[in-house]
Length: 128
Image (cartoon, rainbow, N blue to C red):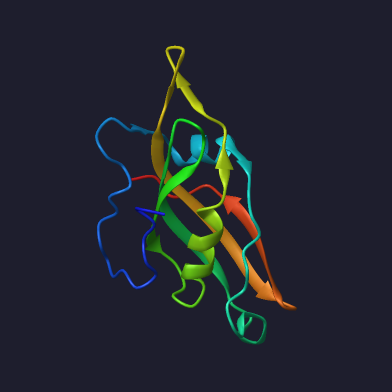
């Protein structure tokens, strides 16, 4: 998918929010999440007992599909798994003055890898 950021990006300013895209608060984005795909653990996540929070910049189209995901912060061993999962998530369409509008912002995922799976919870991302 065009616009999905690579795991190797280093301190790059996220570009998911483009002109014409409505920037929403982290809390609002979290509340619009409709369907999330499981996060597939990377190799050894269970043995390493990885845990922490990943913060991502995301952009959603007028149909609620994720069109851009970029790393802001998070553990480098799990970031690609989280990006792959979030790129499959579905959000409720954002409607402004009766018209669907694409939107963007930050989302944070708290995760814990154990027993061959990654447990996760969407939490409120820090504001700008």
